[in-house]
Length: 170
Image (cartoon, rainbow, N blue to C red; front, side, top):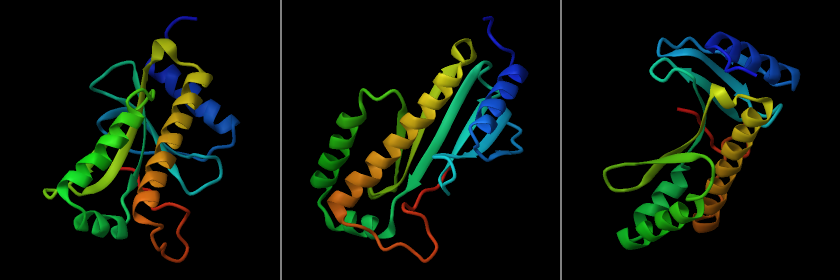
């Protein structure tokens, strides 16, 4: 199979997501050829993004992320800088060989505010398997981050009507 054009990739990705029952919402984004927001896992309030950035022709980026619970941020403020760095280092080591990337956004006091995950591939490897592998890897990484923060700092109190995790996509 030849490498699909950007328009063909958009059509294929949308088709595969729709066939599998995902809610696909097209996002207006001047910086991308296409930008979808989808429910993943299927039928949940959790969201991931599928983006083809204008700046990188042929690249497909899958994004999701999680906002750190306020209770966890407060607990981190109470830990020493050394303990915080050890905690972040454990996360880095655990995620070093995972197929996706992550970016932990820290404030000026080195307190994690959010973590974003990305899985990238080029259209020359575009397949339904590649797409869903990336979505799954991002979701598993998000679950890992939620779990390690909950294990370290306890379960945060969730507002009424919220999902299981305080997730956001940036």
